[in-house]
Amino acid sequence: MKYISPAHFMFENMTSWLVPHITECSVTNISDSVCGCCGQSSTNWPNANKGVKGHKDSYGTVYDLCTMCMTLFYSNADLMGVERAPRVPNKFGMWASVGALIEKGKTTLFMPQKIKDKLPDNFPLDVQVLTGGNKLKYVLQSDVTFPCLFIDDLGKKKAELMASLEVSYHSEIFYICKAEETTSFNLAAIKEAIAKFSELDSKEQAKFKKLIKESSSGAISPMQLSEAVVESEALTALTRIIGPNPEQRNIFLKGVS
Ligand SMILES: [Zn+2]
Image (cartoon, rainbow, N blue to C red; front, side, top):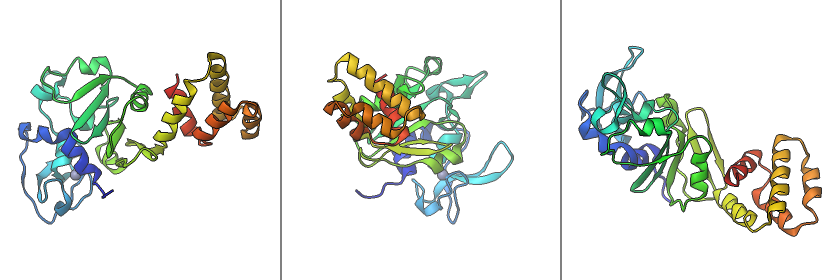
């Protein structure tokens, strides 16, 4: 599949609707510049050679912004809701504990109830009240379409967030993006494992969960895990599908919790 710029994908499907409603700054023609947030040269911006000239950040540093990054820094209280009095709006780039599943033509935001309560009725994106590991659990239970972009936490570090973004093209390598780090796992394998797990009886399910937990934490060795499942064809197959990666095992446990 053709390479898709994560910034373009996020802009088109999650934030571009906001641009005409931002009144604190305006979009002007800019050439031979680099976005001070995502680092892309102005010819590669989502709106090529158009952006915010001379944005001044909270440290007093002045730089240009592409229209994608403009939607992280600037907002509109009527459409994004008021974060704090008097009229400081919620911003995509200052939304700690809010996650997003961005698919072509559809974005689902994940957030705590107290943040959802601040959104206006006309907020245009889909919202699910989900936090922590339940955001990823939603992905495990959905028919995700590709390409897509999963952001675990929009957070507050805009430049780091932009640098962390990876578009997932298929379910064998599914990226979990956030400012601090980007990880990936095999979504197809975990979904297959969850389906197979659901066919086990409850006693076997409990046994298998305990074994995977113990092997993830290092309480039992890979050899001990193999020995514990060797007599059951189903458990051996499940262990093989999930694979040896501890992160992937933890994601499986989230999916069956
Ligand atoms: Zn940018």
